[in-house]
Image (tube, rainbow, N blue to C red; front, top):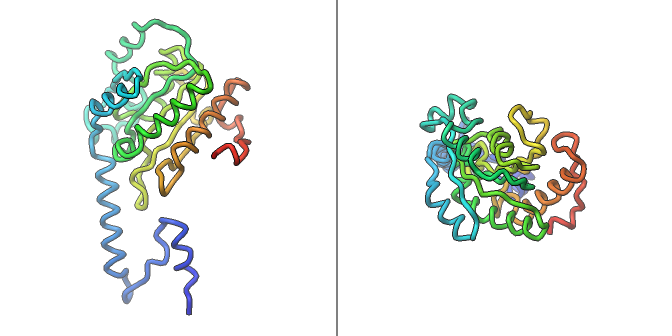
Length: 247
């Protein structure tokens, strides 16, 4: 007799049809769970090798600007999410001292809750995004690298850079089937005090098991165009992108 759950397993990484041994899981399923749990813990607690990442960004011909939050450790990052939403004073003054030329997009990258995600996919996703930006003629600021940041950190950075939009690439909260997922959050008219209802999110960027880089970049380009045309983002901005534009 064929179990339909076994067929469904090929379409998802979710833990379905694990089988059983008596009243418990088979050894193979238990070991797989423990491995995934260890990968998740590593993704959360591993520091981001930001200097190495910054050099890779500069090799793409882009300006990499390393910023910081008041966070001093990954443990503090988990316990004090409020500190991950703002810059430290040195970084704030560094941005204030820059020439305040208006730009279309402030692009920020943070390891967030998964350093593994940024190390695995961050640079390739950045390349795809910058390529779409350049073809769209958007004015870009520096690529801001901010370890231990939360999504709302993009509000302050975007405002200080006098940007029409803020885009943050961030490591998403790892689950027990995916520890390397990136998310992108877009906010029109960034300023301190923006709410999550004013953002659009593109999630689960982690090829080959999630959204491909080019598809994520195409989706972001579409949302940016619509936000600039309509003057808002978030729940008011509907995703009506034709599927064929995803490539």
